[in-house]
Amino acid sequence: MTTATTPEQETGAAVECVGVQKSFDGTPVLRSVDLAVEHGQVLCLIGPSGSGKSTFLRCLNHLERIDGGLLRVAGEMVGYREHKGRLHELRQHEIARRRADIGMVFQSFNLFPHMTVLENIVEAPMSVRGIKRSAAEEDARRLLDKVGLAGREGAYPRMLSGGQQQRVAIARALAMHPKIMLFDEPTSALDPELVGEVLAVMKELAAEGMTMIVVTHELGFAREVADTVVFMDGGYIVEQGAPAELFANPQTERCRDFLSKVL
Image (cartoon, rainbow, N blue to C red; front, side, top):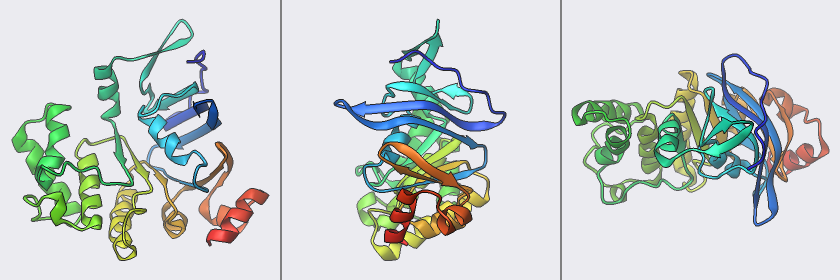
């Protein structure tokens, strides 16, 4: 781990990233990424496969260790503390405590197949937050209603469609009452006719003011919902801006080339 750097403090920033670097087996995947996301904002990451988008999300909740730079979520470093100018990794229980404030929804649904829908949702609030079962179950039923799955508490994941499983995964993440939600291509594993039901839930969350960082190939969603769109390539942030500006008038040749192939 490199020497810690100190970012300029931004009032109200939900996420602050300064000079973030990450390599796998000597191959750089993130190259000095600088980014700030304010509370209540929706940021969409777009770009070709292998550009570093998913790795960046995994670094945000310390599923991957960064090799350099600094990450803060809601003012706290995730996974590290600073001591005498250097970063030191926290113990696992401290990492889990800070990670609890960051909800994440993956490409694959990652539900426990041997647990019912209700059990999948209440497990983390009870074991990590220490919430009583009755309160956790009440909240889980509220969230299932929110994602359009009221009455499916007793179903097992195998009994649900892909879109329904992903909505359960969203409810499970929301049950921790996170400060920020991360979505890693949440519709990429779904049949086309099921994509809309997941995006509808995400649009509702955005309308309610949830801070969200979304890796997506659904450019229509990014155009409609995002406050900021970030185009990544080769581990760099190549371009970023309001969706209306970036999609209509990209400033870099690389972004223009990418959009010409996908729009």
